[in-house]
Image: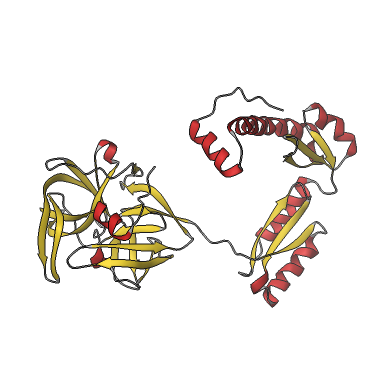
Length: 351
């Protein structure tokens, strides 16, 4: 079923090989089969009408199987190019049962419900560790809807997933706000004055995010936060115009080069690299090794991303401090990112 002669983007082939454990030829065959399966399903669904009972790809053959509730519709599904299995419940019946569940309020111990095409049932999942009286009440109501409902115990509950992106806001404890510098494997880097080791953070959406695992200020002004499993490190910096800069590396820009920064207060601002290896004497103590720029920044931008180079894809550093503002102009200093990565043995997330 299908041909492997079609051309696919290299990134797609690499991802399929990596995540599905296939070689290049197997990946091409699978992608071709999957594409054809979509076309066959559409034709078969139209051919069998209300008798349609779901569709799924048999991974042993690569062919699409279509379920039907009326054996008389078998030939119509075969003519569309599908294999056929007679099922007890139609897709319309199963979807109707699920729609009723969607209208109910489920306790947190119920982790979700779904239509299982191949199994010809509606599966309701419950967390084994938190299965309680409220869960039993919901499950009883669900099973009363249809004999197609089945209950499956699971050991984990899904949680929302968020992206870690340079320039986005994060909050320290219940108080102050800073900005993410750059995503690294397992978290992100930011300014040291934003938090101390052990401080907890929440994200731009106030969802639990992570914990400071390292922080140095004064002397330096850098830190890194280890994020929890709800957050995924992305090679992005927020341009605050609906697009992201894609970070490709961390080649250092020269004095006189154009440079831009991203932060959660004043968003995307640009200027010029003026001097490197500057020492700034803050009230809390001096910080050395900073880079001076004429791009503006304001409170809350601290820790945010600085980028330069082609497409602004080269990470430069994280906002430390400065003077002035974005109304009248100002001077801003950043902590070079290379020193942060080296200090904590971190790997920049690149795309």
